[in-house]
Length: 408
Image 1: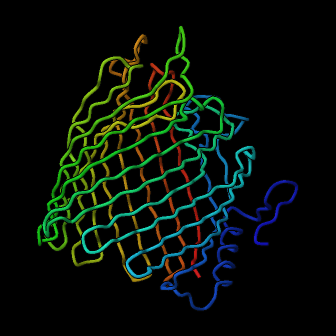
Image 2: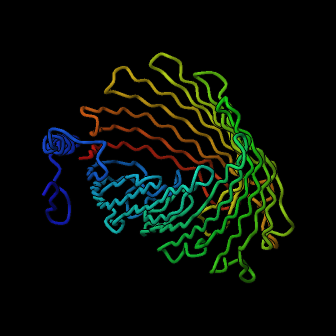
Image 3: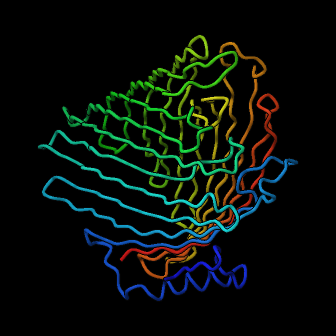
């Protein structure tokens, strides 16, 4: 076994020596040649990480169980399958992982990522996909003050189809259901299902750029009412969106992808309907050199994993850069800013105009000694401003992760 516990914890000869030794052993144990073009591939990975504020304790707040920081081990194994039969393509992903924490052992958990997709095609005019997703992860503690494990299980079922009724025109219809379940009782108010129906009409010129109209409806249901004095109310909602989608291949090195429109959200627990301009614009620039850039800006309604509020209206922006000095080394730097505008619930007060902000930065270095092997070092920082109306103070977190993964 690569990992062994002694008295319930991992022996650590030093802060770095054990992770480096394990990662080196993992690489040496790999077969001499992998086959990335095989339909079936096995995958494995191991990671070591440290976070100086794992449970996102507010600044000035008392540390949970007398500590803020913790380190963890992650082991992962699974398989990938991707094969085309005539015009039908089948893609399968099955990943199982194990996370073990050194101090907060009550958080230890088994993660999973199961995906199955059928990319179907009938003749030359009809194509689409159908599939499912099931994943289990540890939910974020950014908006939750607890030292208890809170697993989030997400399940998705989807199907869509596109009809190319003209060389330059295409119509698409899609159906999707997402369900979210939280393990922690204090978070069960966020259990929900979302049914999405969308219709699109796209213009496809010979240049490769696209433009079209998108109409979408999302119906959300929360099985457990959220406790709000003097009683409890449900958080069900209906969200209607109408927008314009465009992919502009501006030059050989610049792409701009945008979806901009108007969203109307009807959530009875929050009073009258709320409407806003929403959308997302993403731009990428990849010159002939070894550096590429990306940027994005967005405005959308987003769910909030909190015991007090179910959603916010967010304004966000991000930038990123990638440097590839050699064919085997890649450096990535990213920064993001999200301002969350809280919507006032009917019968409540004190949240008018309330907002907070989340800032995130990351720097990573990836080394690929072989085409199917990656070793990655990641530094990350996250900070949230305080919001007095929700009795939350500012938080900060810094983390470091060293990982190795391979397909064979």
